[in-house]
Image (cartoon, rainbow, N blue to C red; front, side, top):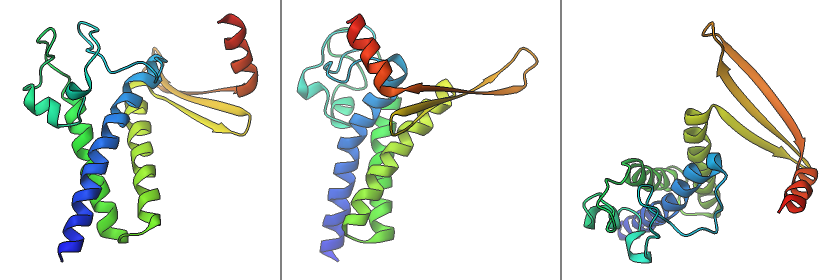
Length: 165
């Protein structure tokens, strides 16, 4: 039994840590902000030192506020980190301690990103080979759901971005 508890504790902590990256993906994918940029406060744009960006712990120690400006931190951050940690434990409980569980955990994080970004933007990007398709669901003026598909060549787009930069 102690081995199972240790496995679940490691799964939870790993899930919480990866949950921090999940939050970055949720925030930065739709805004097209670089992943290379360090974590920052949404209110004052101050860069967060590493000790203010520890998933769950920093939120609790700073009482949900930015150290620089005192603004409230969006509750999404600890909730997504906590949810990701719990989901990792559930995956390991269902599948045991094996490589398949690790893969399922990463897939769970990806689905969490996709679900939340889709809920906020009604856009899902799917890439297959060189082509990417953006699926967009929008409501028109008559409150009817309209589906759009935008297909583009990934390498042509990358070339265009490099030429503009």
